[in-house]
Length: 427
Image 1 (cartoon, rainbow, N blue to C red):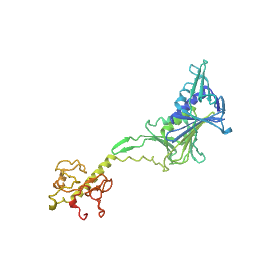
Image 2: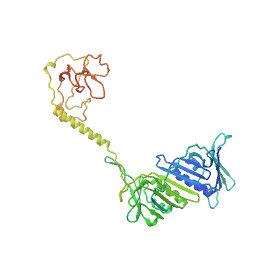
Image 3: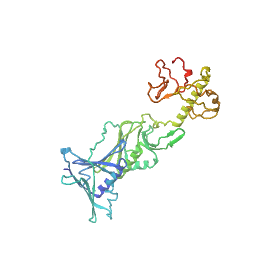
Image 4: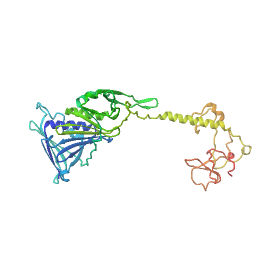
């Protein structure tokens, strides 16, 4: 049996609403980890590129706090997961009103129903209003194993700190459609926040128009600034905006710690028993003054296909021009056609051949058409029955690779429309 009970004042309940709004921009679900001395909300986005952990101190943040895990002794914990929207429907935005008007609450009481004598496990939230009205919410939760992202601040030599209100003014210049944020320090004593979108082209079509917005800030405006000059670190603009907006609700300073590109970056801030840590995936380069590496352009499939067709057509035309039309043999002008053979009709000049392997036959190529053979000419046909022993006449094996005759003394590949009169030395 798990014992978890705590009470929040209206101001603390409003802060819980603000953190849930921030976590809702990272994931649809929020995980809860309760220990004997602290209560933590965590979230991991779907691409696993951003992790958030917001910890509430049991003694400073809550009016009363009691947590007795089921097992694990002093280091035991209770973990569960719920939908972020479900919690937001309980912790609404107007829980705290300094003037005490209608809609404000007197206190918020939270408990967990996890007892053997109960049929269902519930996360119970009671909102005690000023007029004596009590609103009770019973939410369903799922037991999950909560994991945390590790970050070593001793390795992160690059760090800076600035008031969240000032950074909020800077992000208002970022375009609404920008996706990436490049943070780097120049050699002129300025730090640059550059938001941009990467240009993606498909042939002559531009799928995304590049948009770049750069905000240069003097390093003297930072509370603390120690960053390697020319080091570019790139993160998501959406994640950065969510973090800055939430830090501004606490009116505190935002601190950044990172070591090098492709290594994690961590933002943290907090006050009055409230600690927020966001670990983000990064990219970038070391070159001083270098611009972000653009995304590889998508090759144009229609152009490549057209180029391949043109080269194939040119190659086939050259093969036709090198080989003269066959001469009609006198010994084969009359004769009886084999029962297993097929007729090969000759296409007329100027008319497209539906069975032709070539695309877009030109009129000037019509004089290279084969002569009008006698329809009784003996030819080789396809045998798709795979019964080669029952075949009376030589056939081609029906396979996806190069066609070969059934005789053992020939290893030369021939086309399926090759005539018997043109094959020498096989029989």
